[in-house]
Image (cartoon, rainbow, N blue to C red; front, top):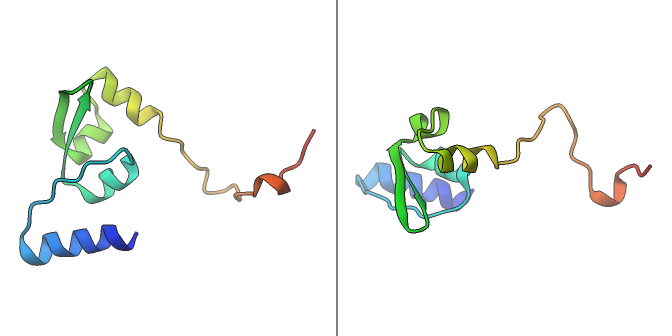
Length: 86
């Protein structure tokens, strides 16, 4: 998280352009203003981050977004050794 904040601060303070290549979509969504999605070496979608994540146009982009696990904020996270067994 500290590195991401450092990137954000440098971009803002020094008016830099940052090319950030990642598989972590949560960080991409949080850090980047624009997103380019590649599949098998070809660009399949690009656009503003909020648009790509909320309304993906390409099936591969939609599948990537759907594959991100969503945590229920109302459920506590348990260590595997503390989980109930049947």
